[in-house]
Image: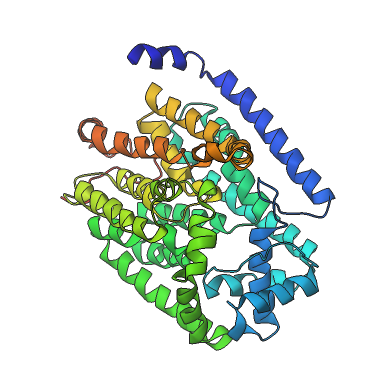
Length: 429
């Protein structure tokens, strides 16, 4: 096995990574431009529905803008808005995000659809670029590493899907990166407040309170709870408490389980989705997130690990075990990938990164083949969840020795402070 890794590693050289990244960036950008030219910005990689994600969010904002917040999760009301404003005749782009997301998109819903889509695309690109700038200190001092890292990230299907579908995961990513920088300098209260932005994507932030708890960041945890409550209360005059109840009811409805949790598993990336695609009932896979949370707490409970490790494991565990993780949600792993680049940049991890990218880029092809040939149905399963699980196992199994090495090598005279994204001191004495 070591010889196989060594042989493969001779192929993954910086020049080849740079060249292939540019190829995929150019191809992805061309696809977005072509879609925009035909009035279909943004689109998913599959291209099977017009603007399913941005249109859904735009619809939520338009319903609030029109005073129809009481019908925010009514499919009939959403369909009427889409027919009237955009003329969509295909499947409904279903708004199922929290009410807070509808309020976020009110300014964009005040614009005509195409202009709103263009404006949101610009916001997403700006947030993504800002987040990539914030992780720069975590990539080490080697010249050119940050530029190549940014290029490789933009070459991933996750970024193309994020921009092309008009999703809000860039908001979650910037919240995480800003919070990590704030925690680095002990601005815990402000960091907790920033992490409350996770209400836009709550399933991606389920381990955040546990991460703060195991690090004994009690002020940040309290700030997170208070700010989240304030944000929810601030939405009540605009959407009412019934909207939050309707949202929770939607997420537990049979229609959601059938149309989203089971129907879209081919675009999801977690072990839970893989289990669903292979025949497990959608509801039966939810406990897998509890398994992931238990593993995370068990691994970090002693408090002797650096904050960078705790947050990397939290992000990887969330993406690996959460029941609902789409391709675009993988951009949340940007800080984790930066950590791997600095601490675990080995032949196995490079191989897993390449395998993941290949599996992600072939999603439309595998889905098309499986649809055309029903006997090939397993081909469209989210097999990319397996290399992500392997990365989590590498992080769990190999960190003890590495952590001790880092702590022994850390200078104690204060003349050479650590310049990473997070302080590498243990989380507790």
